Length: 454
Image (cartoon, rainbow, N blue to C red):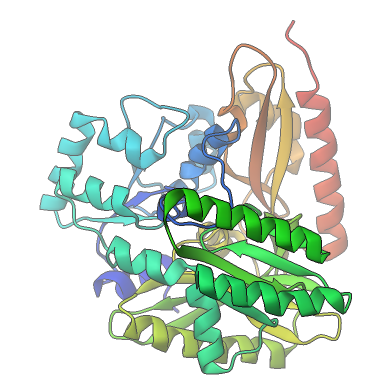
């Protein structure tokens, strides 16, 4: 059976052997949302430095013969450990300057030497494969004369709007929560009026930014007064700007038993392949990881597979090809809601697949996890490895932790204490062993990172 990376390359380029240049420009939604009248949004925050170093996830999606562009070189000891595990790594290209507040795309654009190198790769047949494509990635492609493997930024933005997701599900009869799209202020007024009747009946609704991501751009509303205040705030902004557009959804808040994420790949010829389904771990709407495999019945998986084929046909007809991740949920009555939103780009789960194929044995279970850290000083990988020691994965079929992004640990380092994140994939023979491994890792990390400078 063809592995995921080869299959993805064939879908994107027609050949499983095409060399790709991977670019981990996470939260590309921020670029798509510029100029869109959604819910109030904030720009740079202290967490942006960590998010921008999520670029290192691309290191373990790319394979031998590929390249990956990073904001900064990885920790040498982490690279050495990955090579000890037998992972064939891509060639690593780094920007001359890591601006913590900038995406890897912007850092690459600011480096003439890197642009020349990328141009040379184009001459060898390489193509640029970003996490998602916005105008910034088109700018990088043009500056480096390195063709994109994706559709245009305009197509990618259009199919990533939550308004697109909801309208597609409406038109194809896919089950979803009661709700309304608002592309104009008039449509927003209709949506608010309809939502008011749900609130009057004691239900809750949620307002969503069309390009919100990971808990941002979402507001849960429990009473009519709060709904009216939000509506008036949007109207005041419109009167000030003269812009009569909106980019919002209003939906009933549905109770859930489990969050899901499934992925399929759309080929350039319009065909598709269902890749996987995982249980998504979220807290307050913010993605925290995945449980693998998802606890679903064969009938539920079959429903998701059928939904993926329906979505793929429409996406292909609208000019999109490539990786698609869909958020879904199971309600307390075990009914599937197969489309909460469509993410026609790489997803967090995309970056786990190659490691699953290399290390996860039949019958094993896995947990993709992030561990929040509070550090007094930079934490080198060598010190982390010594602290976790016997808890780290030793090889295929074993139990333990594989660190699949270390850059986010020290991304926020400065003159004082700072926050970081450690991302990893945990493997174990069963759920109980997996939970025990998770607890032990968390405990050792707490002991290690609670130190103060000597």
